[in-house]
Image (cartoon, rainbow, N blue to C red; front, side, top):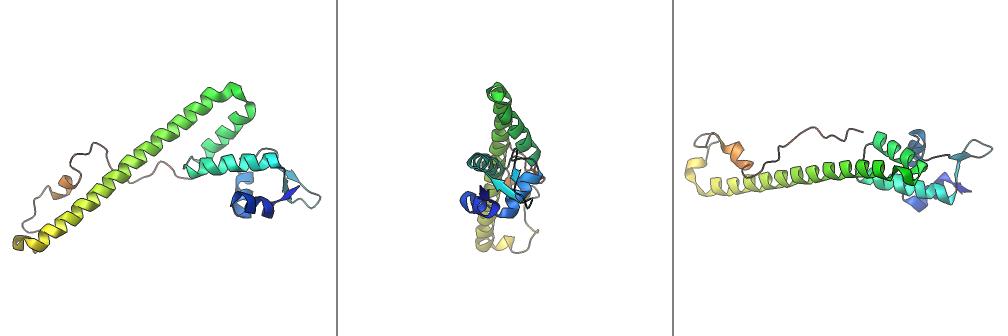
Length: 153
């Protein structure tokens, strides 16, 4: 039997994170001792590690729960798990593209400041600034910048 404190140390998680995972039904069949404390077996730690990994790739909790349910069913659900993981991978790729756009926009702002420092006609914003200035910051990108994340857990 492994206590929640020991499980937390071994998984590099706080006991409260493990309790949260359990309350959300992400760790199957967690046992309790005579004092109603959670106790774990080695197999539980494998589930916790899997859940932690899915959480680290920003998979929403409800999809992690679906994944756990499918994984418990076995090999017959590999296609459905592949669909979940492919969806998550596409989401992560889109987030990377958005991060790249934000990085390039920040770089272009810095370049703008360098230009302002050297061009005396650009000393008062927005005088003498191209009205499409902010659009030129995004130039060359087809990715739209979305302020709302699809990961809302």
